[in-house]
Length: 145
Image (cartoon, rainbow, N blue to C red):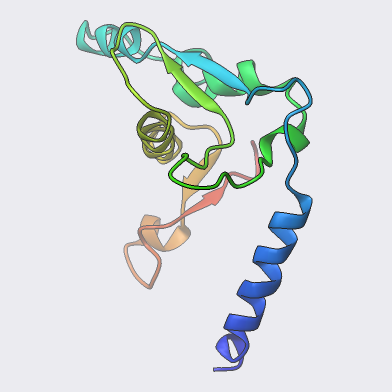
């Protein structure tokens, strides 16, 4: 297929571009934010409704990272076994060791949040609504968001 003929060349260019535009954060340390997943879980267990805009991990991270420069979110790839993360996810009420685990878990959980019925940002594809065709498991940006 025409789109994959030069995939290896595209990957090399992409890698070079990403490496050449990476920079150390201006403040010295990597940006960070705090999540309280325990409080959110307790709220849901108690049967309380969670509002996406105020209670979701996505919204919490957005509020805390809003003022961070996009350039600070493009770190230089570390050498050795250092984790390659753009920001540090700190958790309240949990004993977490390391950077990579909470970072990966954060993206897993916000993906789940974004694909939930409560999310105002993504909507299921029309094929899902009609129950036919391909990509019924996919989501689109909500045009009204």
